[in-house]
Length: 151
Image 1: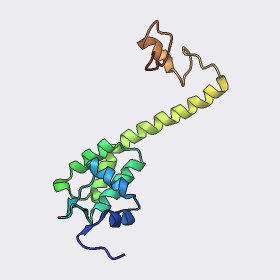
Image 2 (image 1 turned 180 degrees about the vertical axis):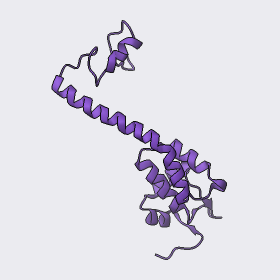
Image 3 (image 1 turned 60 degrees about the vertical axis):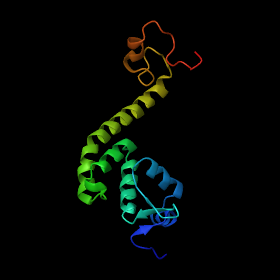
Image 4 (image 1 turned 30 degrees about the vertical axis):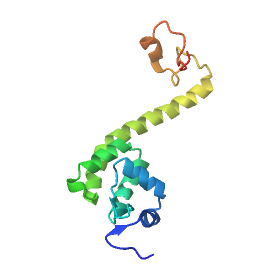
């Protein structure tokens, strides 16, 4: 496919990035990428948008929330495309949070195994459903862990 410089149509960017056009529009609404408009009001994306999309997808794949990705991109001078050095700096900042999530998920996985063996599902003792009876401490006297909107 012959790509015009310096801007791509949504279809060209979608083909190059492997994303659907609707995903491009979503990322644009979320402030992660930008487009310009032609005189006919058609979107055009700078060619370096494909690198921003790679950054967004890589960060999202490891669990970084879109708000954090948006903030990281907003910190780049003049909205430029992230470089390898930018990724290194930002990923280092996100590493501690990811380590915490990994530890939490590992603990949940381990507690799940115990819960399956135990089978108690006790609201007072269950390490998975109500660790340390946290619910009882926050809501003494209540007899339900979760309320419906109607209740």
